[in-house]
Length: 305
Image 1 (cartoon, rainbow, N blue to C red):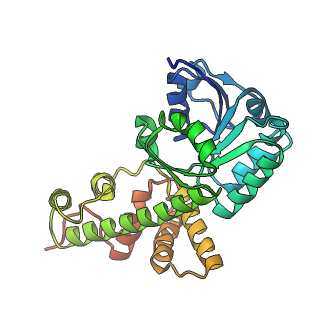
Image 2 (spheres, helix red, strand yellow):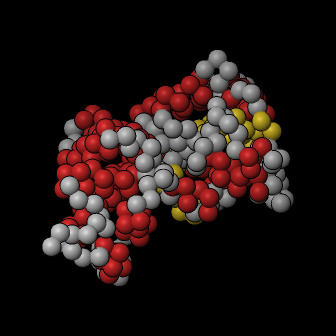
């Protein structure tokens, strides 16, 4: 139990949001929660108070966290008739913390609109997937005023380990997250190509992975996602549809900036192929299946003599 429990709100209780919210409850804070889907059992049995609207959460909580799928979801939760903004009016001490991964451009606009009703705003997208959310080891990339960041940082520390104020401008956190998703996607593609090549050449992909983990090619993707590819376990820690969304943000922002991202575009096409084969809900390590379709060969399959 913390010495000074706070009144906190949490909206969006999916694969990531539910365990993140759980850590705040475990820290002794009073939680007001709202979700469009079924309330997870662990939260239903907790001390959290379920609110029927996002407005109700904002009226009761001093700091409101959002963990939602996409930009339109965040906009609706914030600015609908019974949204967060309606519950913030006249509350200068309140803070909205958006931990979703959404458009940096839209984030700047959302922050201005929240500030216009008198509250403060941080964008704080995360990386680390379901495992990181459950283990409270997420990387948290924050954009917004330093003073607001320092106020919220002790709460971030209940949910993550690597917590960085990327910049004092709203949108800086989201920009960093887009960069993160570019790197992750290209690493998944590289690992998938390497394992497919090794398997087709007749090598044991599990032993190839083990050998590579000890060298310069080692990475978190090789450690975690290569194992998924080998064991054929594509239940989502992070769904392909969500990574598609993030790469769309990267590519659309790049067009606005006049920047070419050719390998990001290629990774997106591989995700598009997966979705065309029914894989929108696969874990993003399932990108390997698009490459396997082109090769007519699967990682771990016995190579022809």
